[in-house]
Image 1 (cartoon, helix red, strand yellow):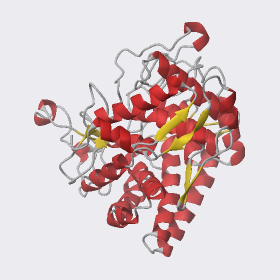
Image 2 (cartoon, rainbow, N blue to C red; image 1 turned 90 degrees about the vertical axis):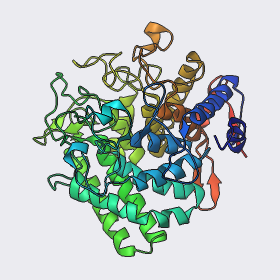
Image 3 (tube, rainbow, N blue to C red; image 1 turned 180 degrees about the vertical axis):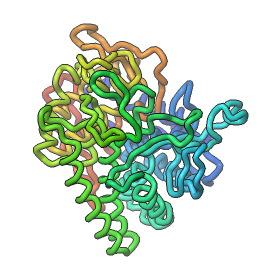
Length: 448
């Protein structure tokens, strides 16, 4: 490794707090992200995070983007390399076997026997509908934290190609929403959102939603990506016309989304629209990502935040992927009842965005308390059993540990707790006032 673990830790901010457990979790997160680093050949310097150990020591677009976003205030190198590598591997072709279209950001890059003998799509594989807007979200967030306008200028062609993919290929039928349906019907991924297991996007009775599917969180990512890209167009690319067009498109998407996805009878956002444009009315954690992206109207956001914290979704250790009591619910099924740390970190960030500080505090504390039971390393996923029933979080038997997005989760949760936001050349801190009332959670700040 060009950079030792000691220098990697020394480059990160110092966390000052009254909790020895939190300090250990912070150090463990930094150490695990160091362990997951690899140095791709397509860039000269810098590392990016692999998906996770032991199963996913490879480049995963979504995982690397989200982990890099989580780690930005602490280790911006990961975001810089991730952006450059994904831009270098961005699709310029149309290939149904790899679910590939021009401008799309890859899902995974693997090598080995399964790829060589055609048992898996030839690498890289592009079967993800969310990586492309998330790439744009990370590009803007990176510039906000680092001021590195040179990289934004360097990647302008890639960003424009990503925006073109969203409107030309991501929106398959021209209705304004990004849908997915695999083109590789032999062994491509059926679900191309972050919940990419086959049974994750289901109606409340357990039947699979018809294809193509437009999951709610992807629409939020697209909304956020267009607004962020508008800022970059105006401030970095000197293209006011593009900026205005992107802002208009984002506002149209927001208006349509709050109409088409809102379930008035449940005061919650639908999980998805199915192939017939019917709402998939399952109560799932995906709606929490809408708080992070900012697409929800204020009154809708308040209702979603309240619903996420009810006992059928909030286990006491975090928000479940699916509400307890619905037919598909299973507390030890990968995406239909478990608790995912990265999912919760984004939800907590969204809570703060809309001013739901009590709920944000509850998630921050629950997740950091759970980390102590896993030797201060949050795993990829753990079981969704009620806290009052088990007394401690229950392991998921095949969870990656460490896993990039889970390793980054405590870093984003600390950012949420301290209210860290870049403002031009300054750093603003607005700590959760109620975090100080939690035993051992007195955060005094971050310093370099």
